[in-house]
Amino acid sequence: MTKLQPTRRHLLGGAAGIAALGAGLGPRGARSASVPALPSSPVALNVIDVAGQLQLTQRAMDEFAKANPKLVSKIMYSQAPAPELPGKIKAQQSAGRVDIDLVLTGTDGLSAGIDQNLWIPVVTDYASALPNLKDIYLPGALKMQGLAQNQAVCVVFCPAGPIIEYMPDAVKQPPKTAQELLDWTKAHPKRFMYARPANSGPGRTFLQGLPYILGDKDPMDPDKGWDKTWAYLVELGKNIEYYPTGTGAVMKELAEGSRDMIASHLGWDLNPRILGVVPKEAQVGTLAGFHWVTDAQYWAIPKGVSNDKLAVLLEMTKYMLSKPAQAMTWDKGYFYPGPAVKDVPLSMAPPDSQAVVKEYTRSFYDKLIAEVPSEVPLPADKLVYAFQRWDQQVGAQVGK
Image 1 (cartoon, helix red, strand yellow):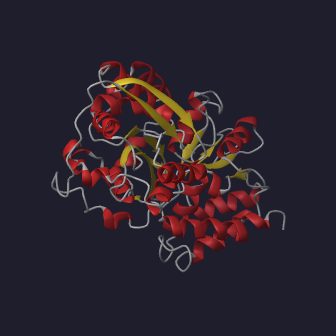
Image 2 (cartoon, one colour):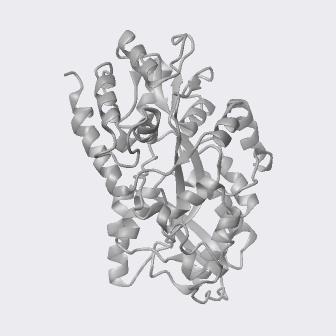
Image 3 (tube, rainbow, N blue to C red):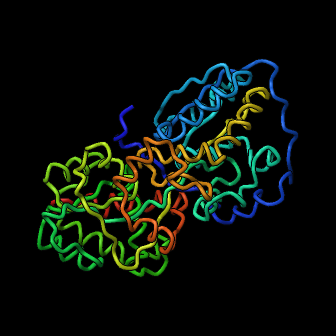
């Protein structure tokens, strides 16, 4: 599977967000249903990926299957666009024949499934089959687990962005503040770019990160709290030629030299350089006052899955949250760092991951991750509003 595809389609949301954090993550076994018994013969699992997550978690799933031939006969993988998933699962549930056993999703598919009541609430119903999530998660991953409202399990985590990526031969003095970025784009029109936020992880984190950088009134309210952000984006847009519909196109333009500076984030910094899509010498920086706007991916189990399969999936989820499985999510920097669980250093990752991440990571990333505040993304309804307003007020103004 090619790695550089605009798969970061996570419509980051989940309305009850942090309010849900306390629910279901407390004493194990609270409100628990009885965990189904493991099957007497192995089951075949159908796994569907709507977030480009296979590159992060397939290795661990294959390891689990290999180590447990009495539980898993085979795992079949497929991919689909996130917007198509809810209707497909709903139709199967209505017919009483669910043949999707596990969904690998960002917060877009997750939120849509929560809204339509598609998922088994595994974190509350089967708490006794899982590790204590409060104890094992990184702080940022625990916040992102709150967005799942106990309907799914966070399996990978990325601090994300926003960061600014640039070619050092073209940008001699990279901007350190939002004002300096704006001034640079005025002096170098059409040389800065970011993708349409609704279609791009870096575009989305840039949009949601600006209210913190600019000191806006309420970074979680794009309607009444982003006056500075909207004004800034309109002004910045006067110096931008166009907005691509995906991050891959932005990376290509940076690599070809048709742009000198872009909005980026950790995974999109490392992975394209590791794959040779963007020159290794590309550099990154941050703007004063920035907060991380975090990202995560999840495992969700549709209602209607048989008890035999559910029992195996709970075992596989428990394995996915173990340190050996989490270590595989370092991958090739695609969701850097990757692990959602504490104490999974790069030294635990497979040798191929260790080699490329060591070579391409930035020495200051660990310090930034440790010291810079991290924020959860906007809930789904507010993010949709922000996307629509950006499309109308910013994206539609290109060339005007």
